[in-house]
Image (cartoon, rainbow, N blue to C red; front, side):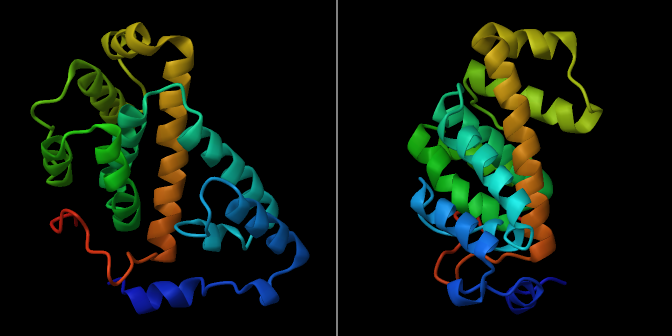
Length: 192
């Protein structure tokens, strides 16, 4: 069973003075960007600095420049976090989803592993797309058409990208056993 102590043993925090020049360059880019700090998967990714740099740039685009409204982009991230039971990802993005306008009851149902009740039509389209993509490894014509009608070509691609990127983030968090901060309880404690 994963523990916070064990998680820190897998990828101990890299202190600036112990970083290689390549790691330091990437860490500086992350800290000076919109994230402002190295949290989540970034400490683990710094073990492969060139990959870390490419991934952090992709993630910056997906999170801060997506054509999808923040509420729906963050909802897709929560769907991914729930799929992977990635507690840190849920912890980090739950408040962002609510700030973006996602209703707490929609997030609460999702956290319980239920198809959320009371979703808006655009939320239902995003939910169906994300769930189908993972379950079936493709989406049906009807699901594609619903998302395409709402967001066009770019929105479909951006929705695929948020799913894929946050799958990687969630996998990293789970392998690295990144713990939520000790003073930061999960908003929904029943998330496995």
